[in-house]
Image 1 (spheres, rainbow, N blue to C red):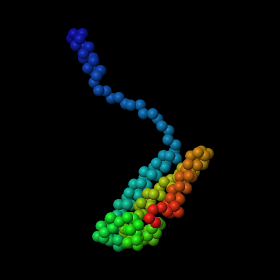
Image 2: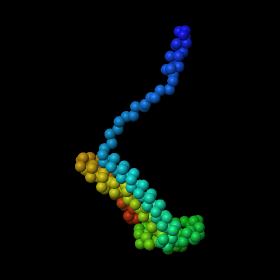
Image 3: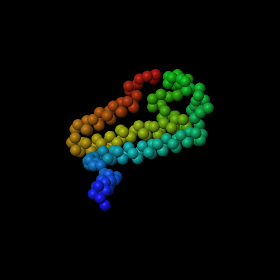
Image 4: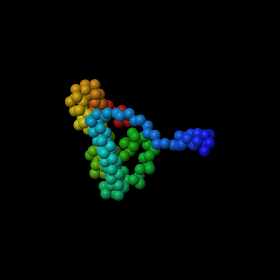
Length: 161
């Protein structure tokens, strides 16, 4: 084999694709954050399951609806205020008293999903940050809990209510 042929063969061998792995930096994630992430992961799937089950309950007619599905198109073009006035549907936390209706039982899954953040903050993150004496993160968690609780309470009512 000539010198040029050997050089070409070596060059083509070097150009062949090789298995290269990218260096991924190792990131240390605190255990409380992993626990919070796992809570959100598993409970989010549980919430999605709740939404599917309550939708099936609604569509099966197991519970009679407050507003029959056949009448829903009459309300699609209405504003929220018009809808509430026309149907007499409850506002705020009044839906809890309507759980005997199939169309309100769907809200259980939504409420469950909405509650996950506050539960995770109260049960997992806040105690961990207080144990670590990490005042900055503990303060952020307390402020987030207060804001979310205030928003969910309905005290700051805005819009058509």
